[in-house]
Length: 245
Image (cartoon, rainbow, N blue to C red; front, side, top):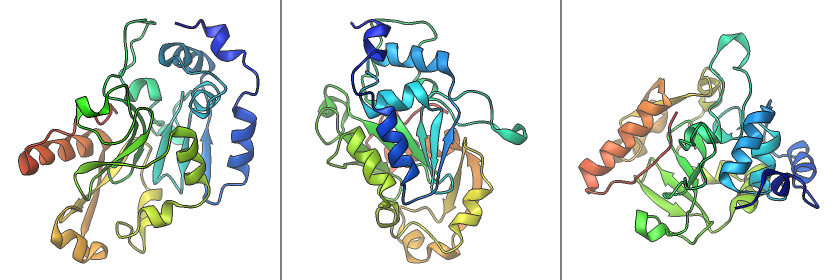
């Protein structure tokens, strides 16, 4: 177990390099203001150093709202958003981190690091992905796809995934689940809401004409709960923890 000063005081911290990538991002990115105290608590509990991209985000950033808020990457946010709207959840909240440091606590199912507006979940695999029914290797980012109702391995760790995302690859990744007016609809959401689609994305009807589908704004917790329940009902498989919002 490393002490906080060991996690913070490192050579070559990741944050300056991350700032350069954010400045040159090929997609719009809003950097949410951080809460320094929450950032330090998160770094200690998750036992990641400021040398890593994950540690850099947790310590220095309240999260990233990517591509107009389509994707929400979790950090350690401070105050609520402007206009009285709820701000984005933090990495600690989403993963149920204890309020006080607990050296025994671990996110055994893996660390949920981002949500998208459709209820897609990006998670960092824990020490035994197979035991919780997830593909990929230890430390690999996996994605719960709401149009497939299952997890898929992305073949990259957190740093490579974040760089890939900022390099403008989201359009290809979400091909087939975006409609012409998606930016306008997403701009009306706050960071704890998502879009429920009917017919659902996983159905043949939903895939046939996404533009004509009905969409409504719902709390992200409702969207994640619906995905999990649907997986169990249709496939008999529980996808497991999708994050707390």
